[in-house]
Structures are given as structure tokens and as C-alpha cells.
Image 1: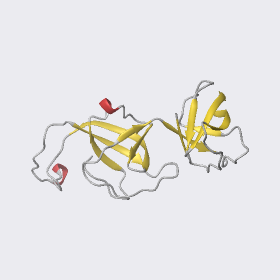
Image 2: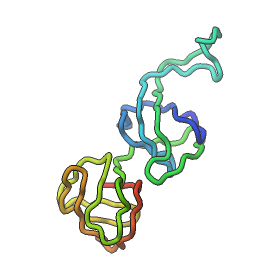
Image 3: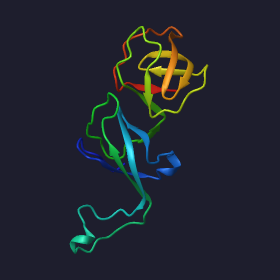
Length: 161
């Protein structure tokens, strides 16, 4: 990554494909979750501030980097500035959508995550849940598994498999 300010929507990464980063996937930098809308492969890296379309002669390196266009601050994360040369990782996550998931709820609406088989464990914040069924984006779960506590999960909470 070549750096990203808090309002930026494009970042440069090395070899998105080998990291499994494609359009319509989540990536994470630190605590911020982002939705990748476009991956432009093999972007040449040019002299900073140089614009060949502006009539300038620019020195460009070989096209070895990829450009990600992202929607920032997904789920409950916040858009913040990120330093140069940080790790960008693909995240296999979904989000709680629709209404907040109250403590007594055993079903909720999920988005961006494929159906999980019965018997699979999912994690929302610090709560572990056992999937009973998953039909059309609505998982049914047993709450508070493996010593975790059932808590309220607000719309936008991240679901991990």
C-alpha cells in the first residue's frame, strides 16, 4: 500500500490477485473494514505528482501494482488515515443488516457472506454462535457458545466465520 488519507477511496497494493483481493470483497487495514468496488490490475507507478495527461514527461516503473477503489468505513469501522507500506488483507466477513440483533434473537439478516452449513461457528464481536440453519441470508443460531456471552449486535456488526 502506498498510503491512504481518511477521505481517500483509492489505494495501491502489490499483487491483489495473490492475496485473493477481487472486486466485491472486503479488505482490512488495521481496524478499518473496506468494500472493494474495482480492482485495476498492473498499474504503472509514476513519479509522484507527475501526470502524463498534463503534458509532463513522467518516469514510470514497470506495471507491477494494482489499484483498489474502495468504499470506506464498512460495518462499524471508521475511516482513518493509513501510513505507507501497511498490510492490506482480504477479509471473509459479512455484516449484520436490517435491525440490530437483540440478546434474545436467534435469527437475523446477514449480507456479504455466503450461507454457512449447520454446525458451523460464526463470531460477531466477542460472541460465538452455532449455525442451526441459513436460508436466503437469514441465519438461525444458538447464541453464547464456547463460554461467550450473548450481547446486542448493532446493524453493521461484522460476522466472521
